[in-house]
Amino acid sequence: MSIRFDHVSKKFGPKQILDDVSFEVKRGEILFILGKSGMGKSVTLKHIIGVFAPDAGNIFVDDYEVSAMNTRERIDELTLVRQRCGMVFQHPALLDSLTNYENIAFGLRSQQYQKKIGKKLSEDEIHELVLEKLSLVHLDQEILSLFPHEVSYGVQKRVSMARTLAPGPEYLLFDEPTTGLDPLSTSSINELIFELSRKLKVTSIIVSHDMACALSIADQILFLDQGKILLIAPPKDVVNSTIPLVQDFFKETMALLPPNWSIKT
Image 1 (cartoon, rainbow, N blue to C red):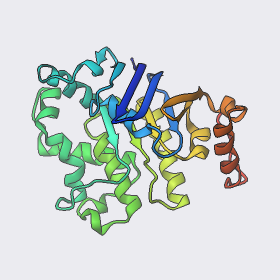
Image 2 (image 1 turned 120 degrees about the vertical axis):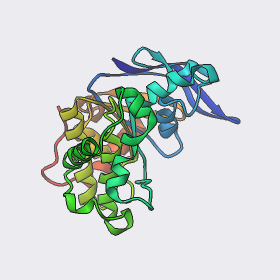
Image 3 (image 1 turned 180 degrees about the vertical axis):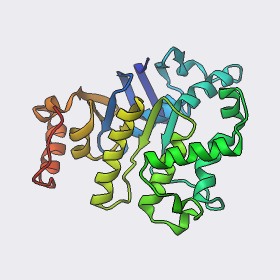
Image 4 (image 1 turned 90 degrees about the vertical axis):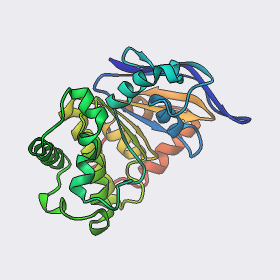
């Protein structure tokens, strides 16, 4: 089981966003996609769930060819793929009119989820699942009765993650998950991503500028530049890369690291 890109290209107008991109993320791996802004990182994530269709090439999620599902006739298959993927957005994107509890429970009440599991959950079952996911993101039950605006931005991020986890996705897709957080909260969220990936045995793809985190927890790091893959390698090989952009990222990162920081080996 994996996510695979085979020679994928995408243009928006005259701008080439992805240019013959090929890679594979295997079951249970953590892949970081790094690169400068506007180099196709978030576009890559959106191709996985069929928000965008490639101009050329093929994209597979397990045995499903997502790149061939951009027709009305195959919308049910695309829905199945999206159910396997949990997306954590750059901003929490919680529903302000709902409590944190109702936000986490939102996906559990959907017709798509009920169809997936073959039944409608009771309120007791929903409550149990909400508490389970809340525990996974290390939040206390007291925040459940509050609305998103009544908790900190960092807590909102964790509530958003709990909401994504609730329907039990097999793939977690993170789009700049630490945007807007202070360094301490950033480190905490990064550690949580690693913990969830290992504990739940899910595959995680993280779009980020955070090379320190990538070097600490990633199994593979992919560098995108001008729509092309400059490098895809484990952290220990990234550190020794002679590619100028990769070296620039690493030098900038090293200047900001705490003394006890270490590279994943």
